Length: 516
Image 1 (cartoon, one colour):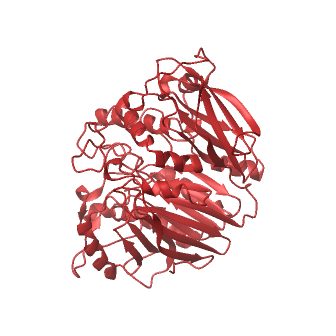
Image 2: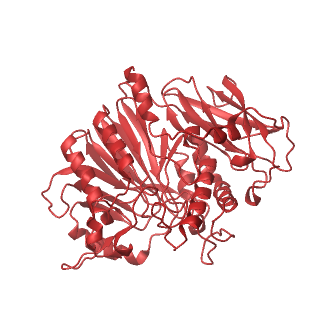
C-alpha cells in the first residue's frame, strides 16, 4: 500500500461496517418524486459542508418546509439535485448530480463530492422541484504531503438556544478562517425554561421525532446557517446531544438501560441526519463511531475525539467534590480502549508539525477549592478519570509527538492550561497546552467566577481564565507558531452584537508551554 493510500485510510480509520439494509434505505436508486411540490420553501434549515479531505468534501441539506412539525414532508422519497462550482455565482459548474432524500433519514442528504483539487474553495447548492437552496462555500484540505505554510481555523461549542442569540455565529461567519471545529453541545436536550431569552417551547427531547424537531429549531437560526454556509465544519458531540452528563450507556437521570438505549439511538440518528458527516458515520442503533482524523498537508493533524460514548460512569457519584478512590481506578476510561489505542497509533505515526486533539471536557487538573487544605474537582471532566488522563500525558511525554495542542469545550468559559506530567509539581515537565473555549451562548454561573479566579493560585499551570463572555476561539497556525485569539461578543441577549479579541496566546514550534 502506498503512503498516500495508507494516510487516506488513517483519515477514515474507525468507520464501522454498515448493515446493507441501512445503506440501501438511504442511498440506493429507488422510486422517488422527481418534481415535488412543496407547501412552503423546503430549504429552511440551510446548507452545510464538512469532513474535508484533499479531494473530497461532504455537502448537506435537509428538506423541511415545516421544520418544527416533523419537517412537513410526505412519507415518500424525493429527488434532490446538487451542484458544485468553482465560483461564488455558480457559473462555473464543476460537478452536479442527484440524490434521494428519504423519509427514513428525515429527507436529509449527505453528498460526498469526489475528484476535487486539494486546498481550494468551492461553492455548492441544492435544488428540489422548483426550489433552490442558498449557496454554501466549502474547502478541501491540502494534499497529504504538501509543505503547508499556514492554516487558520476556529473552534466553538455549547449553543444553548434558550440562553441567548447566536451573535457569536453572526461574527464567526465573517471571519477569515478555512475551517470550524465544533466540540459538542450542538443542541440542548432539556425542556422549556421560563427565564430564557428564547424558548424551546417543547418538553425534553426523548424520541426520534423530538430530537429531529430540536435540531430543526436550532438550525432555523440564520446566524448558525451563515456560519455553516461560510466554511466546512468538523463536528463532534458531548452530552446534551443526548442527555446532560450521560456516560456511555448509562443515563444520568436513572432511565432504565433499555429506555436509555432507545433514547440514545434516537439521538444519534438525529445527530447524523443534521450534521455534514460521511455515510460511513451513519448510526447502527445506539452506536455511531465519530472519532476520526484529518490532516492538513504536513502542517496539522486533527484527532477528533469522542469522550462521551465510550466513557465509564463518573466516579464518586459525579459532580463537584473531593476525589474518592474510584477516581483513580485503572480501568476507568474517557475514550474506551479502542479509541485510546487509535489515538496513540495516530500520534506515533504523525508527520505533522502540529498535532491537535479536539475533545470535550477539560483535560487539565483544576482544584476548584481555594482553601489550602481541601480539594474540589469536577468529576465529569478528566479530573474524575485520573489514570486515563495519566496514560495520555505519559504517552505525550514519552513519544513526544510534535507540538501537541488540546482544544476543548463544555465548560462555557475560557481557560488556558499548560499540561503537566504531574500537576501537583509546578516543576514537572510540560507535555502540551490546552485551550478551552467559551460557549456560543450557554450560561456560565456568575457565582463561580470569583472562586475560580482565586483558585488559580493553587493551579499554577492554569495561565488564563474568564467566565464572563461568550464567543469562540480563532487559531492561526504557521510552521513557527500557533496564535490563539479568544473572540468574545458584546451580548447574546440581543440579536446583534460586536466582537473583539479578549486575549491572545502563542505556542512556539518545539517549545512546550504557552505565552501571552
